[in-house]
Length: 154
DNA sequence: GCCAACGTTGGC
DNA sequence: GCCAACGTTGGC
Image 1: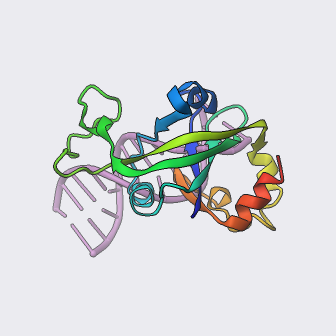
Image 2: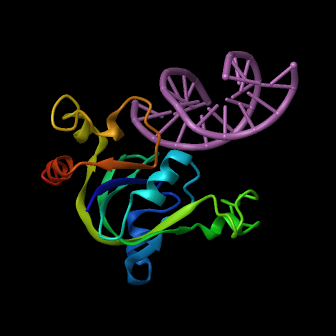
């Protein structure tokens, strides 16, 4: 079992949007970066957990946790020519992009802000990819120790 | 809106 | 394979 951090811009999809979905579950679609795709496809598995991170917003930070309820399968938004995430080079016979299904586990009472996380950039969270310079990946791994530590910050 | 830090594209 | 130009991410 592994832990992850998933980024989303709350203006397009927030933790409250997830809470409003049937069964509080959604396909995590729209990942269009190969490194992130590889992790989604090959490493993230049903039974894993992930932080739901709000990026590019007033208060960037971790808004809650989700459970991975389905391992990778093809991202159908890539096949829909009218969809914002359409990719003509991804075909059903040879899909290029993948999704996982996630279910809301817990929304934090208060967001664990990027600022709060940064306070530990020299210590317990020194290796957290999110805090590394220039990090832009929307799917990154979190160790068990980091996971436990961050939960204590709520 | 700015800009750093990437990733991708395409000419050569 | 190199690398300049361009696009995207995301914090500020």
